[in-house]
Image (cartoon, rainbow, N blue to C red):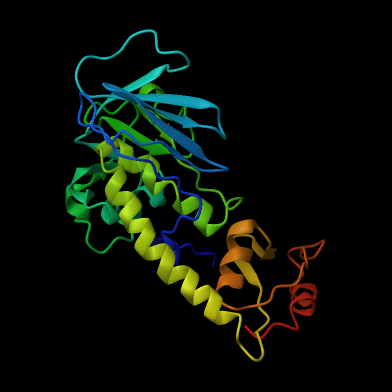
Length: 261
């Protein structure tokens, strides 16, 4: 069964950009953050703009009165937000890492939240047009109309690229500096581990596979997320794309017969 349980341990960023910090009228940390591929954050005195450069969407965050006529911004949020809904698991991991788990009040499937420190009894099922939340993190910018904020949850990004989005979430709580400090610590540990794995005398050969039982299928996953995670763990990974008939167990076993695990 495919799983992203390892992801919260990999909250790391390699492409963060720092700048001299000056406090504006809203006490926003006046620094520019830019990631590629991903997003950038530009801060002014009384608002900041979060540009999702992948989906070409700009979100405006403000502290007092909502600014007007800011070029490109069509969706505004007053920050810090105090109630959050999520339709994707990655958001709950970010909130917990930022110390904001109490702000999570609704989720698509609360029982499926895997964060052990989140009290699921206090998280309700997120409905359509839910008025109890300020923002909804989703894999779609249109899932909840004006409250929707997109977070990438697909496997086209590497673990490090996807983890960078904690800075994006942090901006809704004015915690960009905390997120950057978190990245510095975890990035050093992650990179050290990945570098050490290069000294293995014999790197194991591995595939990331997915099994489903309704209907029964077998697939070899070759997306950037899985391949990068295996490489960081010291494993080699062939470019086998799978088998033409993913219901053929014999063909699947033949394709991965050289795997150590």
